View 1 (cartoon, rainbow, N blue to C red):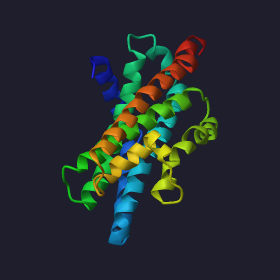
View 2: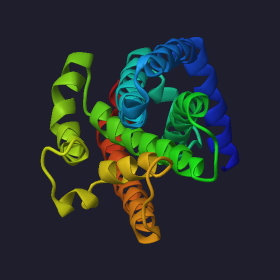
View 3: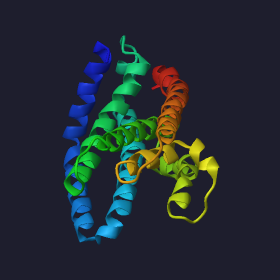
Length: 235
């Protein structure tokens, strides 16, 4: 991290702590942990994958929507973006701080229910990368919104098609096209601790996720410039 990214990251972590994000996720994790203890062993791995998959999706996408809209209402962008702070530092700080929360939350669920091994790195990296992706995606959507209702209205238009790989996971409909979606790659990495995948499948999963993060980063930056930074003087 650059010094500016680090300082913003520390601010974001304090902001999330102060507004109860960590307290809320302790409760959510406890509920998931208890739920998995109640399931038969033959269902536990599949249920864990779905829980870990939905966690960074909900955390990254919907939490960042609330954060962006809260910051808009508090009018922090006028003083923020007339400082030397760069937009890139702002975006990566948000993505990494929520990514850390996702890894801590999802990683705790994984560690309690399954033995740790070298394969666990796939789970932790899958949580981090998918959370970063969804956080940047949610940032771009929220940047163009002024109310939570508008954000929730637009959210399915951006996020629903990303859930298509779940049809393949549940055996409802299979197609190789799923492998082009970052959410399919996330599912592969989250499964890799429980089910073996070829090296090339894992490499492809990482490549798709990283490429998707780069693309959605530039898209989110464009949205922030158009709807937030260039309008700061109008607030």
